[in-house]
Length: 226
Image (cartoon, rainbow, N blue to C red; front, side, top):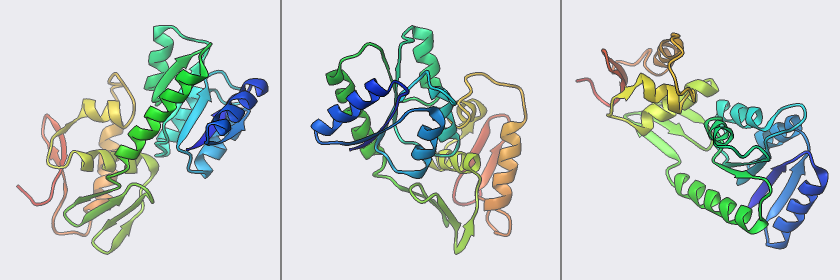
């Protein structure tokens, strides 16, 4: 595995880098949130280990920014803040696991191995298709027929989620929780705006619309009009 440790305590970071290398993994460290974010955006790591309290950008902001940009690298949060509310905030920010300090390296290693296995299983389905609409989750390439479609990161995540549930009604609540990571309804038209933009990009100029509004319920992407 290739690991990035984002930890401002240099002794702790050096210890983890050395320990991971000793068990056969490739590991490197970043010592503030800005550097960690830049590396995570630039390099395909298998797992991120992110301290919550970081200079320049805190760990939750780092993870949230990655998720907003469509980067789904598994992230394990390390933090001295170990109360239930703290763990919930970390997971809702996009973290995949949360380990309070102090911790044992053997438990940290086991948790990271689980995250890596889960990611490997998820990556088996790297391409999604609905009719002549094709989404590549690795390259973030979207095409309809021979036409390449350029999407913003949030539009890509929205389309990806809809295509994962092709033929099913996707409710507003499902989109808020899974695309925007809101666990409440902010009472804005953010979904309507993004759906409208997405529809104009994937359906405009094509005789057969794929993205449908299900009145009073939500949205559905499907091949063929009904």
